[in-house]
Image 1 (spheres, rainbow, N blue to C red):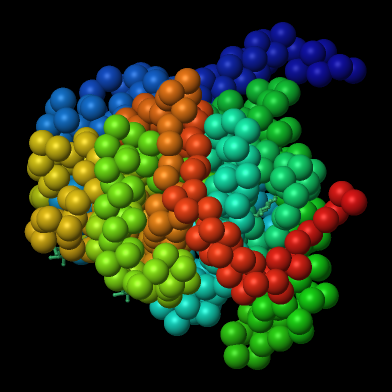
Image 2: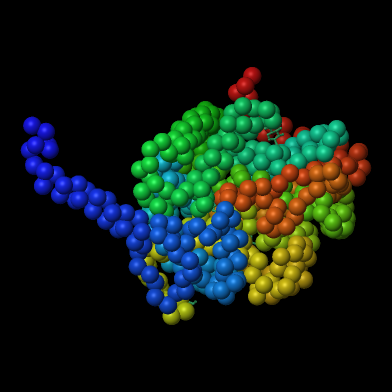
Length: 535
Ligand code: HEM
Ligand SMILES: *[C@@H]1O[C@H](CO)[C@@H](O)[C@H](O)[C@H]1NC(C)=O
Ligand SMILES: *[C@@H]1O[C@H](CO)[C@@H](O)[C@H](O)[C@H]1NC(C)=O
Ligand SMILES: *[C@@H]1O[C@H](CO)[C@@H](O)[C@H](O)[C@H]1NC(C)=O
């Protein structure tokens, strides 16, 4: 009747053995044995362990540990195993240049990861930054580039104007009572900016609950892209463990994200004739761009998630450097530089939106980006064809990750001062003042599409802050400017600064008023696009 009686004891035991044997074989084949063979002539990290591969020794701060191991063993490029997945890490400036720029056609693809791709991104489709290389991704990337040219940035100067004005207005207002931690303010700037660009909607109330929800969801979602919070990506049997709370969180976050993205997209479609936005442009122009609504939605999710944490974090780091030991000196230099190029603060206030004439300030931003690789391990790439490097033949289909933090702090490129913040570094040394300068935006075929736009935003924040205010530190909330120690959470994919306090003091209250009214007048229209779901 039952299976037991039907097959008899002998065969029953055999069945059990078969099952156990099968399970062991499964563990071996799909969890312990590397998924791809070892690459000959390419150094491998020591310290392999079953199931973990090399993961265990990397601790919680993968980029720093990999950087240290690379220096210790003197191997800029090495292969290692995360679980059973082979990954090639690039840790020096020169090697990054060779792989990501000289051989950029090889690294166009991106691999698919279990957590991010199968759990989080299912309903919305893949964004440009997470998609493998295919026609869809290519078409979307090309369309985004139309918004990132110098004239396009010029056209959107009003967006930068309104957000930098609101940033300084609010920080100034709030620091009259007590010092402020700039990060929440710069996060809002970044989110406002990208949502305005994409959907022509901004958040004008700091306590907006939709805004708070978005901020927390974006953080959760980005944690699923981090290499050290997602062991199920590399150790397949963890996926079968019951009650995986991360899995639940992933599904929940992706559902909530879809809800607010749909809200914002619909809002933009309603306003498409009166407010310029990417959604609106594409909806009006489906013929020439050959994009459908899914493309448009996906492009915008990609821009909002790509720009939000990175710009927010880097902008806050400007403030961090301005209150460092030499900060006051640099502030004076930037103030004087602005006045050297323009006849008055008020003139400069408007002009910095359109041109980047101040060389010390440009160098400051370049150095800031080099110093802080806010995405220390860049999102993974995949080789699309085989190529040879230093006698090793790298096959197609290998995962490659650039350790931007390590490349940016490579002493053989930047010398013994590589770990110091020296704003005049690029100004003084023509040998290093050549693109890509640093790898904070990635490089080559899948580099960040918004490099010039981001640099412009940072430049406006820096120059406007220094020409209108002096930024003072709060001695009771000291800043940490170390390129590793600055980060609040070293396990996150995108790093942001720990708490510190600043005060803004107007250099001349009348000038500040005049500048503020100038921006306010120019941006009446944009300010009216604020979203007020709560009220
Ligand atoms: C300081 C600011 C920023 C930093 C540090 C940054 C950094 C990065 C990095 C490291 C990548 C991956 C590059 C690679 O794999 O080589 C990337 C990709 C991308 N970023 Fe940015 N980003 C910033 C701002 C922005 C902004 C403001 C936007 C949009 C408005 C944006 C949109 C994108 C997109 C669409 C991609 C995907 C490119 C692709 O895979 O083809 N980023 N960014
Ligand atoms: C990779 O870069 C090297 C050095 O520039 C070059 O000689 C080689 O042809 C490149 N290979 C591919 C496949 O792009
Ligand atoms: C970005 O700016 C640099 C110089 O500032 C320029 O050479 C480059 O063409 C710009 N990139 C784009 C996409 O416009
Ligand atoms: C962006 O939105 C916030 C409210 O969420 C608003 O107070 C602010 O003026 C806007 N700009 C900046 C830079 O914060």
